[in-house]
Image 1 (tube, one colour):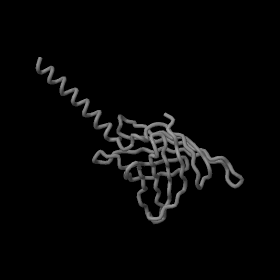
Image 2 (cartoon, rainbow, N blue to C red):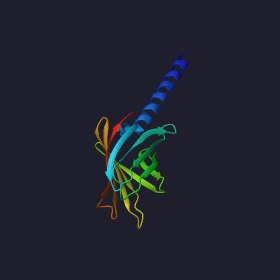
Image 3 (cartoon, helix red, strand yellow):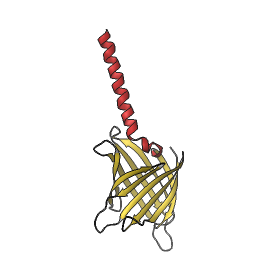
Image 4 (cartoon, one colour):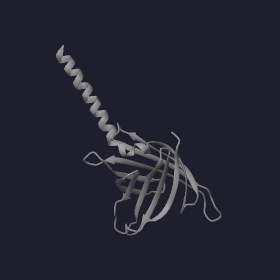
Length: 169
């Protein structure tokens, strides 16, 4: 009887530890999980869209899917932008890397850093290529600021697009 009780206790502790480890893995991303609707302005013009952040593959990755639309103006045709980004764990088990793909054929490899209520993704340096920075900042429980910037030297960044998003789910 004691061995069954001991085995049950070990099983419960193991399950609790696994769940705690998975939660801790994405703790810095928890405020971004869900569905967001936003509007922004920048090089493509004034536009809006939706994006989601959700864990996948038994919490081993975090997936962002995004869809945005920019209406035509007198000088530009309408633009539809779709992208997919996968945040993944490095060898230590920390979420410090991401890879991005979009419908324009871009692929960007990012390294991730964290500040107080901010997640910063900075593209890997590639010779003769611009450096990209994608920043998410929590403004309150239901509002974030998203900024996408471009730099030639990795020091001086110009904002390409910036917008605010509200959590809808």
